[in-house]
Image (tube, rainbow, N blue to C red; front, side):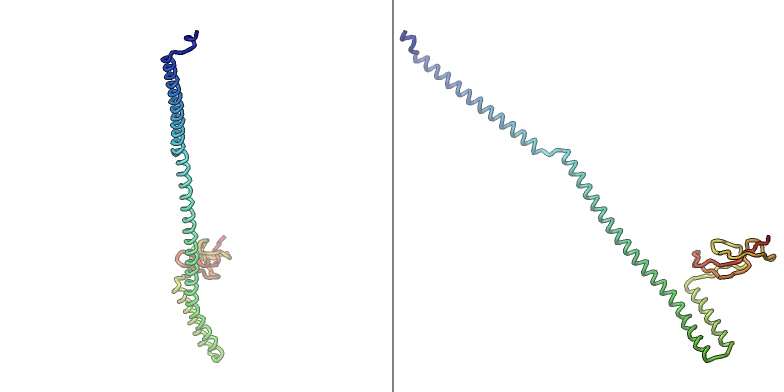
Length: 205
């Protein structure tokens, strides 16, 4: 009995070796599990570090929108500057043209004032008439300088583009729709009408 209860030293040694191997295997298994978890965590970190193509596309689109907005702002600023310069140029040109016209007619005004002064001291009708003729010619010269032409009307066919019919009447010497009387002269610059000629149109009905 006592022999059965006591173990053989070799058996005890073998059992100890088996226990040690089991512990070692358990430790190795635990280490492998930890290594697998670490590898899995590293894989997750790598995936998290990789950029999402959708995020890149969104970023590109946002950049394109920002670029377009900047271009739009620059274009708007350029247009505002152009409009400002254009308005300033138009105003300057308007002042220049007004000055040119005024300069020509100021010469006529000077002569008219001199003629008025001479009327106070002169009773010569011929001299007065001559002075008025001189002023009239100077007016015509001023119009020529400004390239302003009288619109032909009397004896011409009526043209609503350049004539304004204010009266009508019969005239056996002229055909219908022609002009036999000019009530107010019209003027033009090139093809641009400044003032229509006010005329009487022939109606031989």
